[in-house]
Image (cartoon, rainbow, N blue to C red; front, side, top):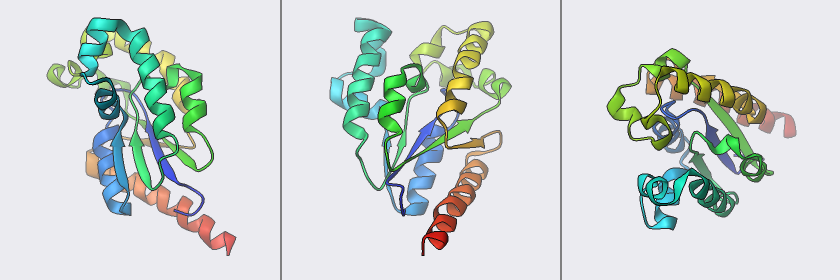
Amino acid sequence: MNKYKRIVLIGMPCSGKSSIGRVIAEHYGLAFYDLDEEIEKYAGMTIDEIFATSGEAEFRKIETLVTTMMASTENAVIATGGGIVTKPENMKILKNEGSLVVYIHRDFYKLATTPRKVRDQRPVLRQANFEKLFAIYKTRLPLYKKYADVEVRNDGGREDSAAKIVNILDRILYDEEETET
């Protein structure tokens, strides 16, 4: 992947980071890591359990620790949790040399109409009504844009969005290789 050692996906919960990330990893023959799954392995409990027993603040501490451990991973796609951008230190860790940060941007109304059974799997969204979800979106949107090297919309299906991202990544990865030779 030339100068990039990893692709880091950021975006709102339910924006498609994990499902699209798996497609991208498979396309490029890279390893795929879901940061939430890595947090659960490290903590020995689910994210729901962490939130229930220790609260969001403790979850964010564990998230930063696991982010630090994952930051040097090479030849990989890393899908982060939606709130990763709320702690600047996390993004400083992830934006280290060799990372290409891709913001998966899904239209707010598509996020808001994500089936409740899917949103209920995310602790921060479980109790979020429309107004609270919009407040989270408005708070995080400028952060996603600030930290992203590339922004890609995911308002279609997973395959369509993954194809768009691969097309953009191909241009970034291969155009830079051509100019370096």
